[in-house]
Amino acid sequence: MRQSESCKGCSQARECEKIYERLGKAGGPSIAWMVLVAFLLPIGIFLGVLGVSERVVDGTVAPPYETPVAFVIALLITTGLMLIVSTVVKRLHRNRKCPR
Image 1 (cartoon, helix red, strand yellow):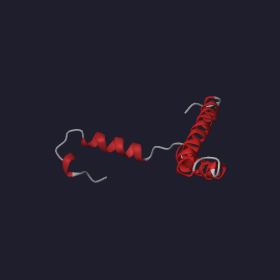
Image 2 (image 1 turned 90 degrees about the horizontal axis):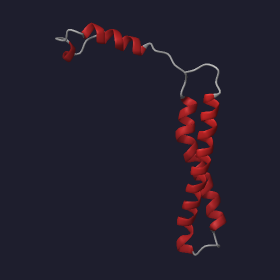
Image 3 (image 1 turned 180 degrees about the vertical axis):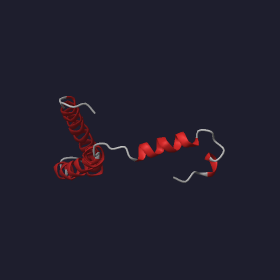
Image 4 (image 1 turned 30 degrees about the horizontal axis):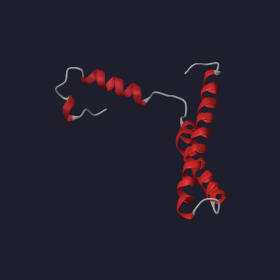
C-alpha cells in the first residue's frame, strides 16, 4: 500500500496501514435487501398509492384540492405501510438464530 503525503512523517503510519488493510478485507452480509426496503420500497409504495388515490379523489373533492388531498392520503398510507414493514423486519431480525 502506498502511503499518502500526510502519513510520511507519522510514527503510526504502519498501524494505520494495517487497519485499513484489515477493513478492506472485512466481509459481511449483503445489504442489498436492506437498501431496497429502506429506500426503493417507500418510493414505489408512495407512487402506487398516489396514482390510486388520485383516481379515488377525482370528482369527489373540489378540483383545486384533488392533488393535495391525494398526496396526503398517499403519504399517510405509505407511512403506515412502512411502519408495518419496519416492525416485521425488526421481528424477523430478532428471531434469527445467529447474532450479527
